Length: 150
Image (cartoon, rainbow, N blue to C red; front, top):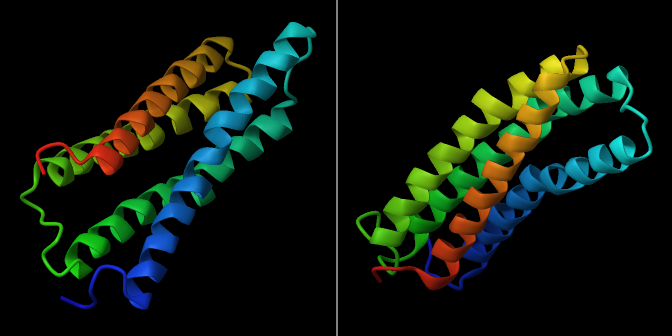
């Protein structure tokens, strides 16, 4: 027990948790729109830009997703036993977080690298894995807001 829910240290960790989620998922909503717009105009995202996107996934967005989960764990530890690891919503949140890590590092990142190299099939995989990540994010938000099993 490091701090009570609502204390300044708890709020700081909560801020870091929410901010890291925003950093992790902002590109997941922006890049599909950019890709769709370029396809509609018949253009392609330049391979250099696509390569930067893949690199940012690995150096910025993926680590932010890792940090989001770690800050969430710290929040549970800091919560004065208001939240416990044995609660259903916390256990399900862990499961979804691990799923998101798998989708980002095992699906999106490899597909983005291949797409940057010109693999058109990989571009469809980026979209597919992005959709899966969006769905998992929605599930995570539902868990965080409604806390099933509490």
